[in-house]
Image 1 (spheres, rainbow, N blue to C red):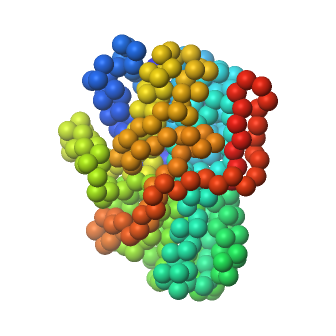
Image 2 (cartoon, rainbow, N blue to C red; image 1 turned 45 degrees about the vertical axis):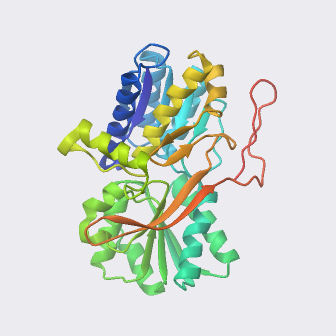
Image 3 (tube, rainbow, N blue to C red; image 1 turned 120 degrees about the vertical axis):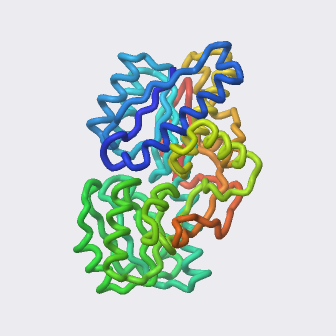
Length: 369
């Protein structure tokens, strides 16, 4: 049994349905192919409330009451950090499938989504080199992801000769951006870059920014394609960065989109940067159990670094410090809410530049950001 803690309530509730569908599709595909070690894979979904308190309850229930064999999760950093001690106590494999601020290490954890090293330079270089931008205003949700990603962005902009004219944060559950938008108006930047929690904060900030009539170029690290569609004309012109868009022109992506429609019909949620890595994670877990020949934790954790799943994002292997080299994309949203890819960057890897963690004896690895 695979546990899926997800924000059915709270900030992530807007994007949670797409994640549940993606996980359900992966399970149905695995079971249609014979299951895992001749057994059917089952999902157990739990609401993490999009935050730490809810995650503690969800993980405790999944690990110690439902006794799942592993967990795969697209969650906020706060939820992940709250869940990791329970993963450690329960000693089960864990795949984190959300882009995040980097630097998270745990004996049982693998990550198949992007970190700032793989994203920041691509986004900033595009604005500075292709668009001639010189001044930037940074806006984030006030938690580890928002501050971590924008901290790296600020540093990179400065190194490249640009100027950060403002860096402001709002609580993750805030819905009033009036004060920050006033600061943006006064600073008059060439570009606004945001690192807000996925879901509701992206919606409220974007709508209020557009209502204010501010015309600076707008790049959003955390806006998914599905949420962009719900914003309609307010999303027009927003630049996005990620590893998955429905417009990826590949046979694997076409097969995936067809399978989603066949399974969910008119209720299909738009696959996106948050849901597709979770789809991949379920398949990666299944492949690791098959490779290990057992659900034993140590064997599965070892196999998770070795298996590859070739899905809608292309081949994904969590082989670099338990993270994955990934094809990265820059994209832009049009007036209908559709997203078109502007540039692609194949096989963007993590570069080791500092020791973050190491376990001596047994299982060990180095990770760096």
